[in-house]
Amino acid sequence: MDELSAVALEVRKYLAWVEADGTRTIVRSPGAPATVSAPAAAVQAPRAAQPTPAQRSEAPPASPAALPEGGGTLDEVRQALGDCRRCKLCQGRTQIVFGVGNPRAELVFVGEGPGEQEDLQGVPFVGAAGQLLTKMIEAMKFHRDDVYICNVVKCRPPGNRNPEPDEIAACEPFLKAQLAALKPKVIVALGKFAAQTLLRDATPITRLRGRWREYEGIPLMPTYHPAYLLRTPAEKKLAWLDLQDVMRRFGKLET
Ligand code: URA
Image (cartoon, rainbow, N blue to C red; front, side, top):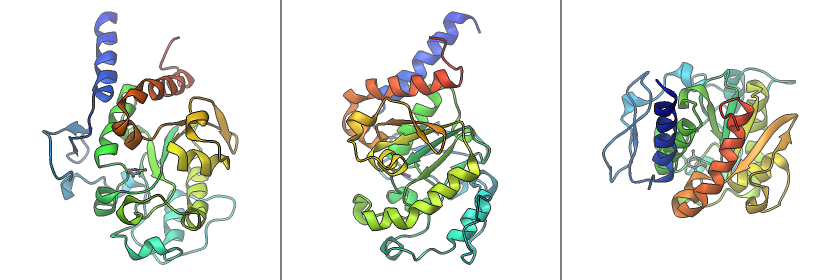
């Protein structure tokens, strides 16, 4: 591919998420990269489209065990979570949404908590916001399967309300253990709950975003949550600046 075509491809990928309106859904065939289907009223990926257990880095449901001290594998963290009843979110969930992606990912995205589709499918970011996140990841010259995606809380807050402090506190040890197992090069915190929880900083996301911070020695970039970007598309420009900074860290952007 000549240089001009390569640039055109990158611009097309960027425009794909800048123009995304969240009315479409991800339909994946096993092992295939995410593709965009025709607009769907009910945002639902077929059962067969779910990642394999290996992609999900998740052990089958297990009885709770102690969180591995000084770090363990993702499977051990999942096992420690078990059929979690540590907070009230367990009452309304369909299933726990632990995380998805490459257990050796160098780039990890942390969101807020599962929505309706995530709760039904057991996979983070598969609804409208997930559709946009996938486009953002691809615009960054990564594939969704290269990275790891998880949330601050692993169970859906009823009616998609914000997670409450006691729920975040109950889930936080598992998020921390996931990140300790992954040891990524960079973390992208999507939205206020991820950024404020990981940084222990109550500064509004409007001021946190776009500035490199550190989480346990790992560079962390706070940016806007894709669901917010769907509601406020004008802010995609700022989010793209943040993501470009992340690309630079990986040598995926020259300037
Ligand atoms: N929003 C999130 O924060 N996480 C998801 O998994 C889906 C939507």
